[in-house]
Amino acid sequence: QSQADLIIFDIGELNEKNERVLMDDGPNYQRSKLISTEEALSLIIRYSRFVAPFNYFARKDIYTENQITFPENMIFEDQISTPTVYSHAGKIVFLAGGPFYWYRRRGNSATGEKWTKNLKQTITDLFFALDKERQIYLNFFNEKYIDNWHFHRMIRFYNFYFPFNIRKEFSKKMKDDIVSIGINSLTRREKMTYRAASSSYINYFYRNFRKIKDM
Image (cartoon, rainbow, N blue to C red; front, side, top):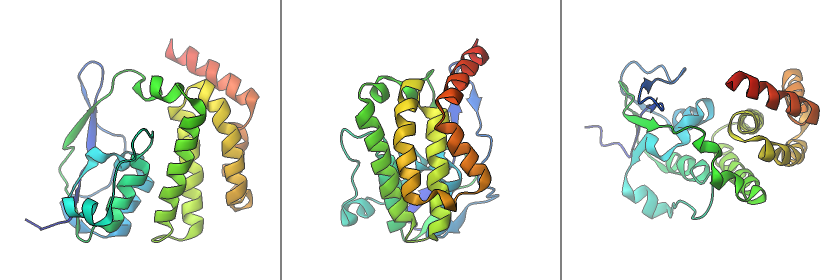
């Protein structure tokens, strides 16, 4: 009806009991509406689930005319492809009234074998994807805002996605990356979060706390 180039919509989850679970937070669109490229990219920045390729429909010519592909044999490839699609779409509509896609989560699938098989490559893929994503955002937002997003994205991967054996290696790379961005640009609370994430002692207590919590 709107002749949109890109339609974005929210998703939900199906847990192991096949129960529908809504996300805790999300965009407050009461009705379907036309949104700007900046608004579309902000959905990814504010709600990381919107980076998934099942969160939208896009015209085929956006892919073909801009040579957008999903890199093969790479983890986190949607961190590059989705922002690229969003940034090349002319007319974007957010479709309210969802979720319109239900994601079936099976246990700890996010920390499955493909993440742990090659630690070095997993971390390399992530930082490559985050850097490419960051370059796209810098065309639409100011640098300080994107540096802040970059920092919190790394912390989120560190805390919620990686098992301990990856977390230990990831923290080493994260230190170098934060230094390159400039740790002085972080707030006091962010500096504390960073130092906690890179502390082997806190890693140890965090890991054991999670074990107790999951019992």
